[in-house]
Every structure is written in C-alpha cells, then in structure tokens.
Amino acid sequence: MAYYTQQILNALALGFSYALLALGYNLTFGVLRSVNLAYGEVFTVAAYAVVMASTWGVRMTWLLLLFGLLASAISGLIIHFVAVKPLGDVTGFNSARHLAVLVSTMGCSIAIHNAIVVFVGGYPRRFPPLISAGSGGVGMGNLGMAVTISLSVMVLLTIVLRKTRFGLRLRAMAENRELALMSGVNARRNEVACVILSSALAGLSGILTAQGLGAISPFMGGVYGLKALVAIIVGGPGNMFGAVIVSLLLGLSEVLAVVFFASSYRDAVSFGLLIALILGRRFIAAWRT
Amino acid sequence: MLQVKDLSVNFCSFSAVRNVCLSVSRSEAVALIGRNGAGKTSLARGIVGLHDYSGSVHILAQAGEIISLKGLRPWIIAQAGVIYVPEIRSTFEGLSVQENLRVGPAALGIHDGRVADLLADVYSTFPVLETRKQQTAGSLSGGERKLLAIGRALALGLALRREKLQEFVVLVVDEPTHGLHPSASRSLLEAFNRLTLQGFALLILEQEEGFALRAGSRVYVMRNGAIVHSGTSASLSRSDVEALV
Image (tube, rainbow over all chains, first blue to last red; front, side):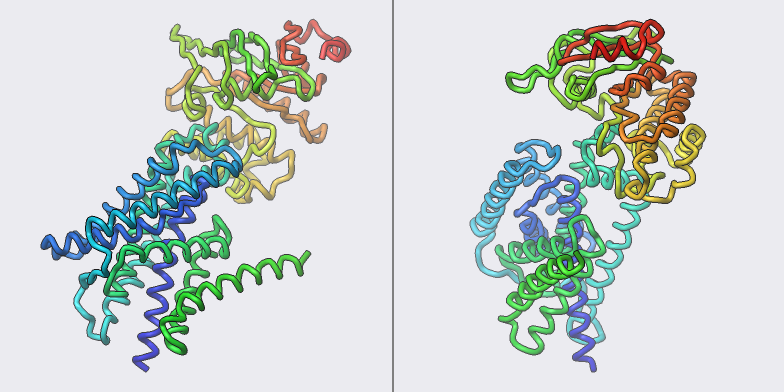
C-alpha cells in the first residue's frame, strides 16, 4: 500500500511541477505572444542557484528558495531583454517575428547550457534536501511539500489573475494587446512583471523537480521546457485549467511508465501520450464538424 | 482642445493621409465623414500613436499647457486623454462586460472602491451593459459590443477626470454605426449627446452621412486621404456630403 501511495505522490509531484512550468509558459505566451525556447533554462538556472547557495553554506530552506527564485527571475529578464524584446513588439500575428524569437531563444538556451558547463561543470550535481526525509517513508516529506507548495502557488496565481488589477491588466494584454495599450495599459511595465512572474514559476518548478530527482544536470531544463510547451499546446494556449490537467496526465504517464516498464521509457511514453492527445483533439474536432 | 496640424501618414510610397488639419474642443462632437479607404482610420491610428506620421498633434489644456503627442507610446496617449475606440476587435472578448470596463481604471491603478462609482456612471449612460455585466464580451450582439467598446473608453475617460489626471478627454470613435440596427443608432446618438453635455469631446469617424450630420456639430469631409470640406453640420445637407465624399 505504501508503495502505491508513494507512486501516487510521485505522479502528483511530477505533474504539479510540469503544471507550474506550463502555467508560467502560458503566461509569457499569452502576454508576449512569443514561444521562448530558453524558458526551460530558467528552470535549470534556479536549481543550480540553490546548489550553489548550498555549497556556500546557506542552510535555511526559505533562503535557498529565495535564492533560486531570484536567480530564475534575473535569468528570465536577461533572456527577455537579450533574445525577445529587441525583435520588436507584437501587434497581431507576425510569423517572421515568431520565427526570429524561436531562433534567438534557442541560441540563448544553448548559451546558458554552455555557460553552466564551463563555469559549474557538465557532470550531474547532487541537489540538497530542502527538508529532511519525512516520517511517512523515503522522500514522502519532500513529495508532500512539492505537492503542497505547487497547489498553493496555483491557487495564489488564480487569485492574482482573477481578482487583482495586475491580473486584469495581464489578461487584457493576453486577449488583445493593442486594445490594452489603447486602454492605457503600460505594456512595458506589465511585460516585465509578467516575465518575472513566469520565470519565478519556472524556477519554483525547477527547484521542486530537482528536489524530487535528488540531482541536477545542465541539460535537464530542455526536455522539461519542451514538455511544458507541448502541455500548453494540448491543453489549449491561454487555457490554464487545460495546461494543469495535461501536466498531471503527463506526470501520471511517466510514473506508470517507470512502474510497469523501465525508467528509460519515461520520455517515450510521455511524448507518445502528448502526440496521442494532439491527434485525439484534431480527430474529435473533425468528427464534430 | 485636440489640435491636429498637417498630419500625413505614408505606407511606403502610398499616402493614406495627406496634410490633415482638424480640431476638437471640450463638449464638442465633430464628425469626420469619408468613404471606406478615405484615410479616416489611418488618421485616427496616427493620432493615438499606432502609426508613424509627419505633422503634429497637440492637446491644449485649459490651463494653457500644450502637450505634444508626437512620438508618445499609445498607452501614454490614452492616459493623456485621447482614447480610441477601434471599429473592429474593440472589446476584450474573453473578459466579462464588467472586466472590460475595469481595464482602463486598472491601468491607472485606481482602487476597486472608486471604480464602482465610475462603472455606475457608465451603466447610467449605457443601461444595457449593466444587465449584461457578468456575460463575456464575446457573447454580446454586435450592437451591444459597440456600446461596450464606447463604454470601455468612457470608463477610462471618467477615471482620468475623476482622479484629476486630465481635464480634457476626447473619444475618437471609429465607425460607431457600422453593423448597427437603426434603433441602436438612435440610442447611440442620444448617448453621444449625453457625453458632450458631460464635457467630453468626440471625434466620430463615420461613413454614414445622415448619422454623422446628426451626431457632429461640425463636420470634416475626407476624400483620398485629404480634408476636402469643413464646416458646421447645419450648413450641409446629406446630398451635399454625398457629392463631396
């Protein structure tokens, strides 16, 4: 029984980590109308920042989290100002700009990989436990913490987006950027706030995932970022609820793959599921019409 | 007062707007009449900072202060009191009616308690919006969406005046009657009259001559990007305008 409880917690923790990343991705995609392929690197940078802070002697969990979130926000802003903003503002759909942003953020992603390899090392590093192993079994405390933090952050994010002036401004920009500008919304300030918020979500996701894995590597963010991107495509761009559901399915499929097959099948099963969901959506849409 | 001098908008070698001069004062409704493609929308988008242009656009405040809008970003121009209501995609379709109206005040950072008073004033001008306030804008009829678009601009204008951020507010309304039922056009006309009585200035871009002559106390007639006639609406008949456009 304890084994299955552990697996359910594993699936939830992984699913919620994807969900945090997908929610952040959804925010940037909605507000900035850009697919940022370096977004997964923000996830990695946060995890590395925690490891670095830990090696410098920081032990307090909240301080480590703060350090990681700060690093993710700064890296997100650097990516935004180096690889996205110089390519111009979005007014309507501009395919040339979209492609340019894809290429420039891909370049940024590779640069961040290499910077980590050069300055920290290309080998996997041990991730420090943020809380000691729980009493319910090995890692149960950490998994429970991951699920609790992720759920709390999602509820908080929903309240911010639905009930605050800042949330209304972001939703207006995501709906119709030009009209938001003509309604007096300061695009620049709200874009920066959106980048900070979405980077912090990616950072938190990176820290919680690294906590679950117990180790980090410079290339971990790429696959996670790709899965989050596909999760928002399957869940429907701009649809927060859809992104969370697909992320949870993704977490569940990966844990089931490990339980019934082997951990090497993990990515094959999760990407297989995402392809099946995309095709399923198209099939249902075609059948309805 | 909004003052436009020698404004020209060019798209590569094509001149969409040529040396346009016009002005709109406080409590005044001015109609700009022209057929499709005459350059009305390009002119309006230039004024609100969405197109580059040559020439100048100024706001003359009552205290004698002159503010140039040239080179300012669209949100700064909106916060300066020049608020554009586009013809298409003029509402946030996924947001509720109430949220649409709250975007402008939220952009100014106005506290929710004070926004409720502003919305009450918008609802008194457009009562149908109050009955639909929980619906999403995308679920409204075309006519209701037009009213919501003007209500959204009005909410921002009221917020600017109540918070004493701007004294002069002009609403630039693009094709307000396009796709409207005649009865809806009549109530829109009444709403415009109420707005000018409240001290708002209106620049109404319209191709329906009858409505434009009733809505504006002064009219400008635009053809091929240039103003070909200006004067009071009382001095022009519908057939005069038809001959000019």
